[in-house]
Length: 478
Ligand code: PLP
Image (cartoon, rainbow, N blue to C red; front, side, top):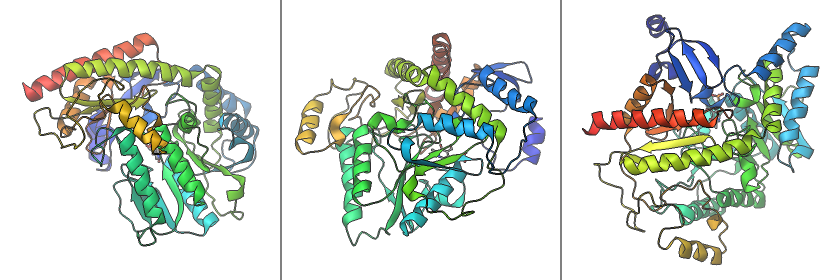
């Protein structure tokens, strides 16, 4: 089967290359291959499976629709299934948006919803430009691709996304985020910056494909203030971060910001394809049929999605993700102390990244401080003084190092190690653990386990990862 796949499918196939398995059964965290081998799945359909594989409430919801004789294809007509999904989804939305929200059902993928959001704000503002960030990933269709980090297009102005480990300003932490915000502000206000009048700003509250980089709350609030003051709609792409993944139901909630537009997909379909754009009613400028599409009424996905949203809400799985995620980050950071090839451990909730580096390489020079590797936030000399200075200067970015802050904001980053990361992924697979790679240089091992995992399963994941890391590092560095 695998041979036939590689002979017949496109050279663009992705996951199948690194994960040569043939899944035939799955439940929760576990996938079983055709060869009988079992795997702990921390890829979770690229972050789709909030409840893991084939959760009973999801299966029951799907069966109920099938048994009811309801039509499976209805274009965008009203149905009881859709009504229930919309009610459940609206119930979860950030206050301030929920009361005035409109929903547009899009084509079935996250990228379709991104496309729709870009189109909507362009029409609503009458402007053509777009603000997006370094390292962003918004999908593979033309507009979404333009807004993603790898692309270059005159209509998209690329702004620095704050990051600690590879801070473009060589500082990281609160000061790096502050500089990133100032750069954005100055580009928008400089009449000669060359930035076309923006119809919107699109951002991920935690960059996923970009390497698991959580935006500081203060920086998000700054982006909200900057866009609000200039009447630029703020689009939060919560395709990957939504439905409890990062420790709050929607990742933006942590910072308290209310975006004008939210792009949602992945987990909202409960493992089946579904994507929507949510926006405030005053942006609802579309004439009838302005954004159509045949497959916008997937009844099975709406039923599975409604069941998933309700289950996450009722069982407080966002809070569970926050607690478990913090514990896993702490354990991974102590693992990092034993492995010099771990450059950084970061994440939020159950969206976790381990950046692998070449410990024999030359570190990028950082002007601010000597390396203080792996010391917890708050114990580093000068950090508090720096935060105080930022506060005195009126910066709101400096407010939140937070428990998930990078383990070492002032480290001098070592060169990324994509080959080592690939070999960690292979070693994980040999030990029955499926992990994803991501990041600018494909050197970040990513964990996106279901929000339903037990403490024992979390421990098993970390054990296998630790083992794989040791094996891969040994074969790379002797
Ligand atoms: N936006 C974000 C933040 C994503 O992570 C992704 C996919 O990973 C997308 C958009 C695109 O979603 P899809 O692959 O369903 O088109």
